[in-house]
Length: 207
Image (cartoon, rainbow, N blue to C red; front, top):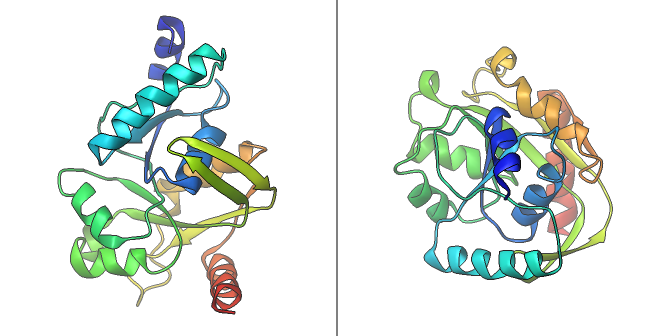
């Protein structure tokens, strides 16, 4: 990243991404593709990921690709989680302070509440996301967008027994900014609507 681009990125809101498989890489690419969007920080939870990132960055520089992403860790206020295994997320969060969390898939938030964020009053402001795009991981940090579809995002209550407990005043940033990226084709929904979309995808995946 050039000094000018780094200076501009430092002034923008920051989104951290944890989990850099096909969906995580797709999210990072989509969000970091414009200077008007947030700065993207990749959380590399394995040493091999750092080595692969450096190799891939060199290849992209040789092809004069201007896209790039930061890999330095800082205070986290907006986190996109694209990990399927809770154990990996639990390890990654041990030394991390989170104010906001966005999660792709089902079941992860319930695991977080049972194992890490036991007190509903101090839990992050959760968002859930459902991605229907076709994305193939060719190699680390090398993806192919095989099918354009949709991304759906919506708030999830901190306490499942109090569905009205959604602090929307503090969780609007990702809900507002993600629909701005055309390649994501994202739409923000209410809690009841995003829950229905999530259940519909669960049924389709079950079949």
